[in-house]
Image (cartoon, rainbow, N blue to C red; front, side):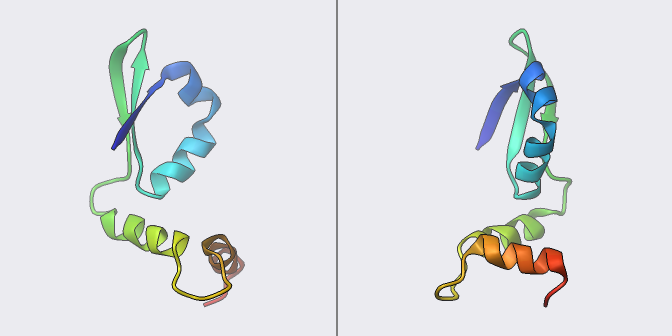
Length: 77
């Protein structure tokens, strides 16, 4: 699903939007109601987005997906 977002909001929340794009979301950016840009992961990044989605819903008991992502950021394998 593509989320429509105004240019001002996109500018003020760019860091958050980029994190969400990394997770596979797509955005359509508008200026005064006109579509001016699309923001989404590069082609071929579908596998990466799917991997992040699996991390958000892990199958490991008592460990949250956010905790696993933090481990990855720390360099754990």
